[in-house]
Length: 104
Image (cartoon, rainbow, N blue to C red; front, top):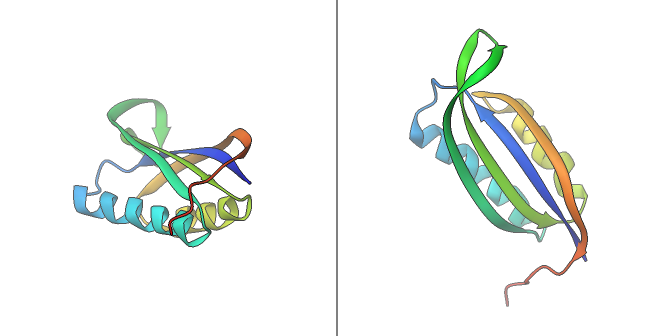
């Protein structure tokens, strides 16, 4: 059994598309390495921030939805903290005890 999580990530507006995609691929790989499954990756685009974050007033929001065990959250957040170009993030548990499709 796994839990369903959602992580909202605020990327710096200075990141290129390739850099942002590389970080997203790394985070998806972390979920897969913990026998989890990425359910959705939604790019919400560039938005104005309500207040400045590290002197930035714009940022790109990306939502990562995944199903995995609780161990993956700690590793995912550790990777986010050391990644260059991520201004803020928030992880929320959406659901408990869901079935994860295991690849054969």
